[in-house]
Length: 67
Image 1 (tube, one colour):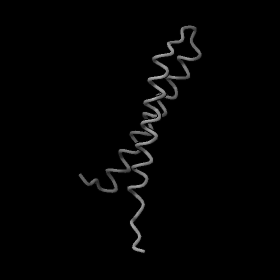
Image 2 (spheres, rainbow, N blue to C red):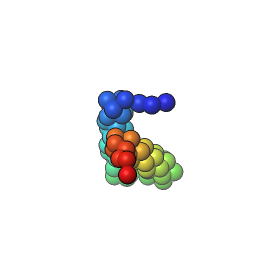
Image 3 (cartoon, rainbow, N blue to C red):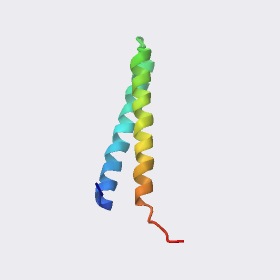
Image 4 (tube, rainbow, N blue to C red):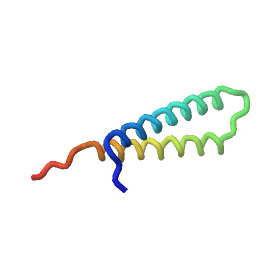
């Protein structure tokens, strides 16, 4: 499946928003009195997955250069 440049940019924007939201949720959970380590680890793992996906999409936007 090939995505257009606008679709990639849109997906990246959605992922960036989700990444920010997860960051805020993690901060709230850490600052709250009750710390659920397993939940925080899962959220952090999701954040890392999103970061990896963003890198893949960024690489898709870089044009191929014939050497």
